[in-house]
Image (tube, one colour):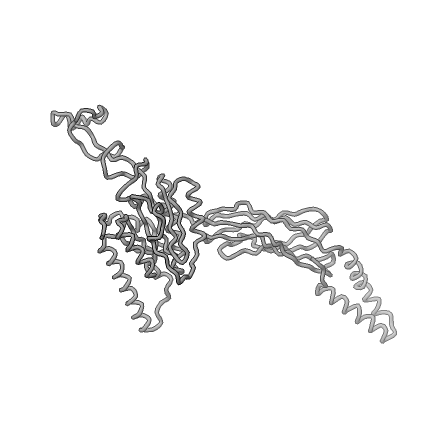
Length: 417
């Protein structure tokens, strides 16, 4: 940082110069006497300026927060010599907002005494951000010199999407053998009542249904549904740029809901760049999935690799695949049909792009939009005729309503070819 003349110094020097010129021209001493205090102020101000040095330290309270939360950014300012006026301005990226009193603060610094400023930032949108760029402006004593500088540090901040509360989830047609919270269609050891049958040797006494036994005069026992886990694979279509933020939000809510119920959750990012995460459980898997979702971008690509090139273990047996897609790219549509042809339990959550469209301005645009909507309706009916539950969802509407629509859909598994 280096001092540079302030506008005040230019005015003082101009006045002093004009006074000396007027005194020499008129041969009188009065103009010089009037300008003497200004000349003295310039001399004292320049002598007291010293080196232009301001030290900045930036620290972020938390590196990971949830959408809508507040995080504190601490800025420490110090200087070897006293500065009467220092202005600190924090550069805030889009998606974050500074709470009152705002991103700019003014203060006075004493020699060698650090001052700590706390800026409260609220996240309004999920994503990955870089903070730490702080601009500082300082004035010398008497305000004759000024300087500015900025810190070059980068502090990463990850804002996770706030997941929706899903009381019920889509049940897989076939569950895994590991214990969980999903009721299996088969009968075995569990809590949920399924049926009653006559007693056979080997049945436990605690399973005897005494009411039915007393009514029929023979021993009957209860049958129950066992609680098993589900393998969920999220198929995220990254070809749709306008709908990608809503698709990521829906995928993160589904992943959080299934992981809470001790199900294994995996991810397939299906776009110009093909990426996948194998199904897993636990808090580590949740962070791994969310970090992968936050890093999702739209990559244009003319090369194509089909879904059949995925390693076999990416889609485990008996897995439930929930496709989150705007149903616009032909490559994604073909891949979904291929999944169905392979006998995979598939559900499609269509992220509607209608919210990203502008209103038509003339009759031609209105007609084109109507034809486009009819084509999308025909596409949904095509998937439904194949036995694939397909529901439409748009950001701003409850995701739980779409999940309930899928649960009410009659589902059957079949293999084509």
